[in-house]
Image (cartoon, rainbow, N blue to C red):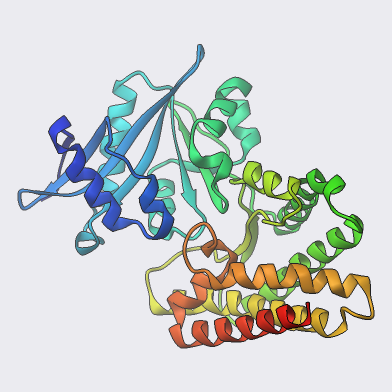
Length: 349
C-alpha cells in the first residue's frame, strides 16, 4: 500500500539522495536538499517524492513541482500518480491558484503522468493568458525553464481549464524554424558571412525534420511535430557569442507506451535524422573548399553530430538518446562514424 505524507525536515538529505538515483547525467547536480516535499512510503520506507517550491506575485501563488521521482526499483506501481494527486490537493490547500512543472520532451513517464492527472502541456501565450504577464515571466525565469533546452511547461489552474498546446505539425515546424532563426540573429555582429551561416543552420534543421518524417513512415503511428519552448534564453546567449545551440523540436507519436516497440519507433525516427546529418555534414566537409555555403554546412554539421552523440541532458533531446535506448550497437556505430567525420574535418583545418 502507498502512503503519501509530508516530508519531515530531518528527511531532506535522504530524499535528495533518492531523487539523485532517479535522474541521470547533469540533472543530478541541480538537486539540493528540499525545504518542502511530499514523500511516498511503501513497506515502511521512502520510495518516491515530489519537491515543491512556490512562485508568488500580487495576483497569484503558483505551486511548482521542482522534482518528481520514484525509486527505480518501485516504478510502475502507481507511486507517481499517488504523489501528483496528493501534491496537487496539498498545493490547493496552501492557497495556490495554479500548479506547474517543467518536463523534458522525452521524459515519457513524467509528462504523461501530469497530463493524465489534469496538468496540461501549455504554450507560453496560454500561461500569460491564464496568469498574467508578470506571473508568467516569474515562472519562466524563477524556474529552470528559461535555460532548459528540450523542456515544456505544464500547467493547471484551480477550478478552471487551460488550453493544451496545439499539435498542428505545419505551424509547429514553422515556429521551430522561425524561433531558431530569431535566436541566431543575436549573433549577427559576431560572425562574418552571417546569412550563409544562418542558411546552413536552417537547411540542416529542415533536412533533419524531413528525414525524421521519412522515419515516421516506417512505423504504424501517426506522428506530429512539436517545438519545445524551454531553453530559449540559453540558446540566445550561445547565439550571441557566435555559437549554435538550437531549440528542440521533435516528432512525437500520439501516445506513449513502455514497450520495446515504442523504443524502436522513437529510435528509427532519430536514426533517420542522424543519418541525414552525417550525409549532409560529409558533403559539406568534402566540398567546403569550393563553396562558402558548404563550408558553413561542415562547420554547423560537426557541431550537430557532437550534440547527437552525447546521450545525457541537455543534449539527449537532439536524438542520440532515442537511438541509445533502442539499440546500443547502432548508437555506437553512429557515434563512431560521427567521430570519424569530426576527426577528418579537424585534419583539413
